[in-house]
Length: 604
Ligand SMILES: Nc1ncnc2c1ncn2[C@@H]1O[C@H](COP(=O)(O)OP(=O)(O)OP(=O)(O)O)[C@@H](O)[C@H]1O
Ligand SMILES: [Mg+2]
Image (cartoon, rainbow, N blue to C red; front, side, top):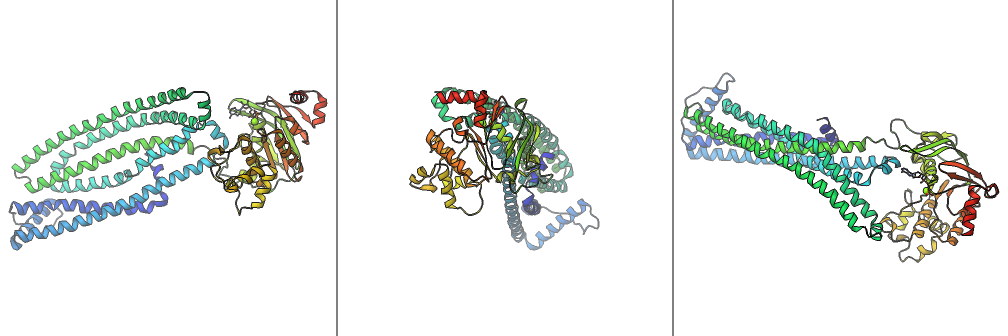
């Protein structure tokens, strides 16, 4: 129940429409019941029933009022004649029906606005939250699960919300009005008909139990299906190259079969509920007919009242049914919402509780003090301490898997060190607002991707303000990308294609470098940014980098050691530790890991 209200909280921006709807539904139901009870005068006229004289009741006694009204009806019929009376009631019914439907329409309209706005708000807030999550979240979680959350689970909630809040709101009002009218007609018959309530109560509780227990398992299985799909889509080239189509197919079929079997077993249980309640409620109706007819025969009840009662009761059952269905959809939505809450409860990168101070510029130095880092329990970096003075060119080298990328990720603030602290100009990185900090960074990641839009937008990505074309060309020139971009028929307005697949690996790297340079960063980080280039282009880029003004600090990761020769200081990493450091010459003289690697590359 609490969860259901949490879902409703997303409708707050459109809440006034909920109240409009509520008001309209009350009026709709009022006119609905009213138009139905007008069967009574028709039947009375049709059967030319007589009524015993009754005076205006002094009390609120129901019986007296009914007698009085029946007598007035009788008098009216006698005075005006049956045909005129009939015409009179026809007009009243017509007006009631028009009003009823007008209010139904107004209510449904307000509901449509409310429900759709709620879902829109939910989607927006989910995405907003997703974007705010730290990088680690996306590495820890399978994409298939996140996709499922944002598509299927939202869809389930949408199905539960669209048209269901309508029922949750309107059906109880309808039932209440009908019950009231039935009670006025005959409280005895009403009590008999209320026997259906425990039956539906049983059905609802059974449904809820089955659904709640099982729906989450169903969604977990859907996560699997989507994960396989997502992996195939992003790795189609590898799948084809290794002829693994059959293997992928099998994996998918298996996951899909598990999901399907599960859904069948769920449906088997659910489908039992409807026929059972139907049979039981028909029994109640039969009892009602029997008892009602008996009352009419014993003149306890007028025939017109009994027939109207049956008509009302018939209408009373249908909101009950739709209300039940609404409840079962809400149950599924609750399960999905609880899954969404696992996402919503992930802490965002920037805690909103205390404001972090922004950083304007990088002035002096970056310091790492005894920094260690572990992914889950696997220690990747151990006790790293180093200084990066402003304006220096620092290189990190070492065998694959030694922790180079992780180290610069820490410096970028993508993860928090598990031990130790990183200081920027003496201020702990954890107390600096990450958005402002990243504004001064230019990062060319090892697996940099391009977005499916124009080159221009890719290069100016994340930059606000007017586009400076001269600056773009300057960045492209530095990144050795000017020539091939000039040759493109549409130049900067060329569409890049999904993940930049339309460019070669080396071209992508150069474009990613141009993107980082365009920002005119104070701290430029290159993680294997030129690894896919031919030696000549690579050498030219590094030549250009050494020419860059000393106001820019450059961190460089490279496997090709010839490119780090000119760095001011080189750190050699092995298994998460700094094993050597110094300038190129110093390291060669040491005859350690660095000189060994360097000589290996020189001879090959
Ligand atoms: N998301 C992750 N979860 C768990 N372990 C990880 C994760 N990312 C990296 N690692 C591990 O951390 C270690 C260091 O990885 P890192 O990417 O920093 O190495 P690297 O020095 O950049 O290697 P390369 O030269 O191949 O790019 C590796 O042993 C790797 O297995
Ligand atoms: Mg790396």
